[in-house]
Length: 388
Image (cartoon, rainbow, N blue to C red; front, top):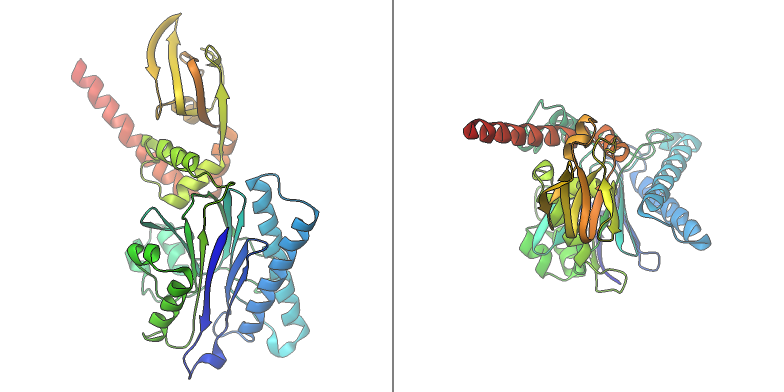
């Protein structure tokens, strides 16, 4: 299913201080990159140990059965990260001269129709899809925390004095909280895992070069530049497979991105919203929403048609790409109209509990959604005033 290109190298002067490691286990569909934290002892050992413990954790789970859902798979990756951090922390305690050993850790698990990511530190995961390159991870650095707090702009984080100062790493403490994400796959997807300081690439190059060729090029470009001591890159290609249809993943993203609430979200944020969504299908005549009910779900139509009904009168049809329920999702007010399927209809449903959980986990998404909602309500108010 996957083709792998991996490179972990250094120039002649710095290779003995190369503290990065990569792991590619095609049998498990499991890939990782770890980069020992500079200024801390035994970074290379910490990186190698974290990857091996994480790989063994995933292998043990697969030996007794496959995860039943994307959520379960992410739970497994969380276990793998925790096991890695505990092992590195314990190794540092056991060897006084290695106390404080730590590493970044970025894991990619390609399983059935999804790629699952767990990430700690400032290595990066990018995805090349249909000619576009998408950054899927956020650095755990002081500079990025300043961006999240609105104290500096994203462009200012590049080259910031705190751009390499980590807020999370494997082994600094016994436990650590990773960021995690599931992405539904499309044939031809390519994932690039690169250590901090490793050269990034343009979208055309990421699409055109072979996996191994691209990994070598990323490392070579880095070693030829100011970061001459070490560089690490891992490239994973997702090939055509019966388990990866792709069309439905693109349809979900298209419908989601076409709604005003989600128009400003990037690929990683859209994928997080899709983690909260359930695909449902109903027959013609089925009622989704009853007027006056306390149902608080948002519905986005993948195919088919719904109709809005008030006092027994059909007000409007809603076809593919349309949506209904955003007001109840946010306000919690009773439904102002009924909605039923005019013909067999398939849709995404986002319930309020999952919605609230997402906003709690990723406040930055909430800020974007509130901004989009304010803009949309302003437009609606202007249109109402024009009709008066």
